[in-house]
Image (cartoon, rainbow, N blue to C red; front, side, top):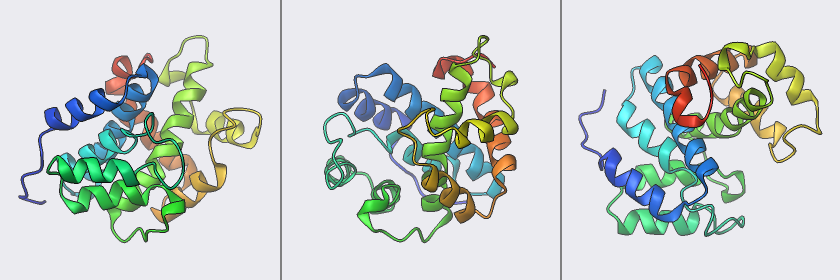
Length: 191
């Protein structure tokens, strides 16, 4: 467990909400933050560090949606705001086109969590109950095979992310669902 003092969650939240106005992108950030914190706790890592990376990973997306700008320009903003290079590197590493090696669990975790968390939320939202309790790994895997569903999700990156963590796809899906349940109301879902 790290004893490093990171910038506060409130500072990260202020940056997120300053640059991100789309409520769905804010909900996505909160969802990925919850998953990242759960991964950190599972592995005995620093939950605050992992949470900050999850919360801020797409904060610049509305301003800089293009590959080559997304996370690069945001990283400059974060450095100017006093965020350490370790956080900036992890955020930049979740965009494959940046070509950064995912050396640490932190970097592999944000890469694995981003697309799959968003996909699981999409699967949940099409359920009549909008309840995470009605989502199973089997139902998510079935939707992953349906190329017409959530077309913006890069399936190759989902599979590569899970493999990079050394996880089984079904088990990691269930892990994400369980990590999201306590935060369901914040991300627009039912537990």
